[in-house]
Image (cartoon, rainbow, N blue to C red; front, side, top):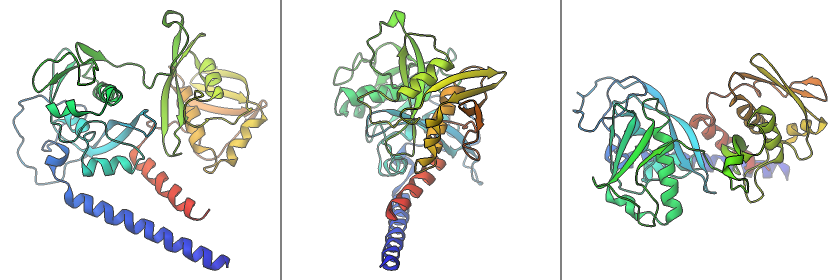
Amino acid sequence: MNGNANQRKLYLLAALLLVVTVAMCLAWQMWTPETTNFPESSPAPFGETYLAGTPEPAAQSSPSPMVNTVVYYQDNSGYLVPVMRSIPETEGIAKATLSMMVQSPYNDMEAARLGLRTVLPENVTIDLDVLSDGTARIDLSKEVLNLADAAAESVMVSAVVQTLTEFSTIDRVEFLVGGQVAETLTHGTSISGSFERSALNPESSALAIEDAKMVTLYFPGDTGNLIVPVTRMVAGNADIDTAVLELLKGPSATSPLENALPTGCALLGITVDGKVATVNFTNDFIRLVEETDGGRMALRALVLTCTQFMGIEEVRIEVEGKPYDPGEDTLSVPTFVNIASDVEDQFLQTQASALFE
């Protein structure tokens, strides 16, 4: 009986992989540069921004090199999630990045492979002008007025601002709609003035703003494949000790995010020696290895929470004062919070594992 069950699971796994492959092929056949609003490619240094009116470059006979860029998507719970993606090097790298956030068959499939969703409405066109003072003026076509509600509008505005201010040449963002200055979008969301980078996924707080400080906490998403950053207001110092204590408390009571550390685990102390932070937990910490991924995503969240602080480049673990090694590379500092290729690999592994449970 067990042999027959395993054989059925293998058939199911093969069918899943076949469906994914066919879907990718069909989506690729459907994709054109017009569908995703990608500009023509030409060699340019990473970080060069698109200037409206730039002449189209001459066609290149060889494939463009790839560069990394950061895209902000939305998860099913409404959180904005940054993902580092590799795209062909192009003169308009900022505009190309925004174009991946527009709803289309190809973009939606790429986002779905990460367990995420695009945030700009279908068929919207983008013009982008980056001024020498660090202002990015983005002109969205009138399709942006078709967003479903105020929440979708707010997410779109935040995602655009976060994405553009990832570029070192952009400090603030101004919005136009159809070439005209607009005060609000359809459902009342303000787009007047300029927007600077702000706290990502802020939690609601009863603390008075003037008395509070902010720390960024990283939690595994509910799919188990992504790390979601949230901003929490705290009454104490915004330092590594406070951040780890808040991480131990877990996500807010209404959040679907997962705990980064086991319930009941307590912090015994943190020491910082040069660039190394050593975090000492109680024995309950060891229960991380019982997680389906050996606690890798939770440890990644812990390392990201610690290394947000200036000067900390390495994290070590102690359990009851004794050095603890959770496994090879599990405490390595990630290049970025979420890397698309890693997330996709993890997603396929998760789906495959589910077939054998």
